[in-house]
Length: 165
Image (cartoon, rainbow, N blue to C red; front, side, top):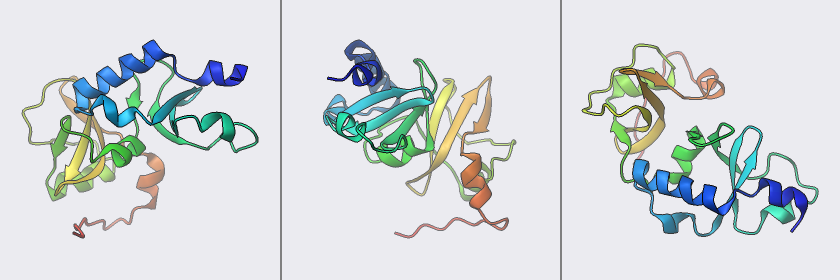
């Protein structure tokens, strides 16, 4: 194993802590992560198929993999990609939004107010009609959109969401 891989692959005890947190917070079973490696980089944790990081590290672009978490230490912040990648495995830690609230979340408006009994601070995956639309943070009793600014910039001003089932 290369020195760079040893420094980048999340240590087993840190991996176990993260997986336990993801089960506690989002209900994602440990087995979901069995075929994946968590790679620690300066901007967060990236996900690679188990054993593929060393191959991709030999000349591949630095952006290979999928960044699921931001931050440099636990607890990490879940990213929009986390919600997209894990939406089928998530069993809790979600909020069902109505159309108006989902649009506000995507537009990163400041007056978010989800109808929920949740009071536990942290990141929640917001769903509209059963589909993931974004991440919101509940902190000090206020909701804050965590939708990436780059995604918001791509949205039309007259955004409307419709479910294509």
